[in-house]
Length: 294
Ligand SMILES: O=P(O)(O)O[C@H]1O[C@H](CO)[C@@H](O)[C@H]1O
Ligand SMILES: Nc1nc2[nH]cnc2c(=O)[nH]1
Image 1 (cartoon, rainbow, N blue to C red):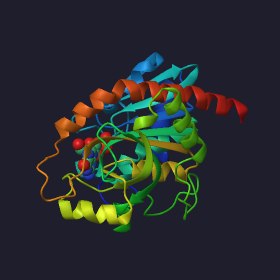
Image 2 (tube, protein in one colour; image 1 turned 90 degrees about the vertical axis):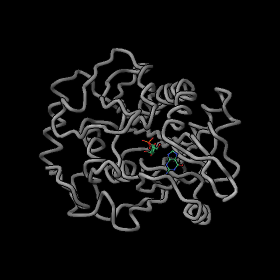
Image 3 (cartoon, helix red, strand yellow; image 1 turned 180 degrees about the horizontal axis):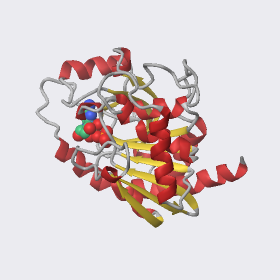
Image 4 (cartoon, helix red, strand yellow; image 1 turned 180 degrees about the vertical axis):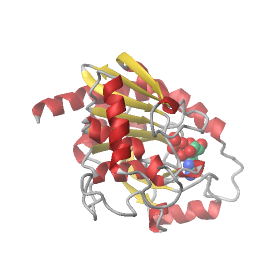
């Protein structure tokens, strides 16, 4: 279990064991999962009746190694909606296989989760974007996937989903519309954007030539996470909303002097965390109405 490589290294029994362990440890039965990217762990603070598990104490769970990723699973309720928050997630560039990176998503599915909200930090490629903008992801480009680094490579387990899943609607249109509406109600329309997110493996930030390629490909922002989790979530039938915080403008011009670094990324996340928390909390309340209507 959890050996490195491009194909899946977890068996259905591994997923079941972790799921059963969690179901035995917690009375919560989450319907919504929130994955908190770099420096965005505060999103869990709005939950009531919290119960926390450190990743290292959960069987089969990877542990977080990136600063700004606390490394714990928080169960709780938001406006009576049972939720689970991942305070920190996993990246290809940490040396984890994509099976490890996406391991929690299938645990959420087996626990009964229906909606997954993913957040992260990214660099703005679209020249109109400003630092601090929140981009609702309408689509993604799985750049590692183009080269065979794909979480669904290897034998397909039909208990999770089909061999050849459709990805043209990976990000739920309903949830995107809801996010726009909630953003507008909260008075954030000026810095809420919609666009295409591109995942690269990292860990280095882009060269200027690479950034120009991404612009030509139609990317609005670029980061080092999220796409594997979204792909696995869509494969197993979860409804997904992706929000990415633009923490820096990616340099497209050789005359520009700015140099991006992770501390600056975390600083911007801190600046926007409270607002993102409000946005996510309100969205979860509305998802509950959606669950009730089903
Ligand atoms: O994607 P999250 O986890 O927010 O982290 C982002 O922040 C790091 C770079 O500063 C990269 O790992 C990038 O993907
Ligand atoms: N690849 C990449 N990831 C990021 N995460 C936050 N900012 C950036 C960026 O500029 N590039």
